[in-house]
Amino acid sequence: MGIIGWIVLGLLAGIIAKAIMPGRDPGGCVITILIGIAGALLGGWLGKVIFHVESIDGFFQLSTWIAAIVGALILLAVYRLVAGRRT
Image (tube, rainbow, N blue to C red; front, side):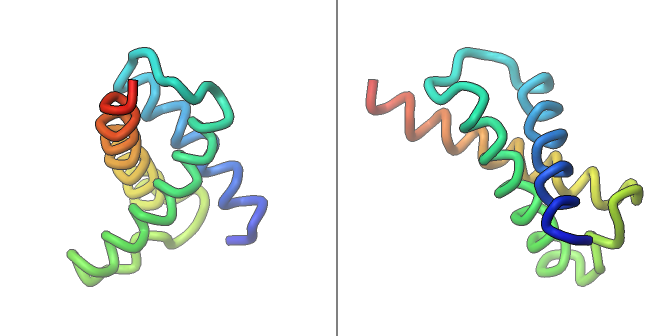
């Protein structure tokens, strides 16, 4: 999957993670996109390390989407914890 695929997957994973975990975030849309992209990478890495499987097989694979969304949810939760302490 190319860099454009990662960006699109991360954008959509960030939107889905935001829909699953609604609330006010102090970063806006750009931060949500960046969290989604990083979450897609984190989810793929965690799938490889924990389950010893190739979780990022392709753009249209269910395992890719689940890994990306779970990674985005993890990063969104961490971001809320860190950003919530600053305000």
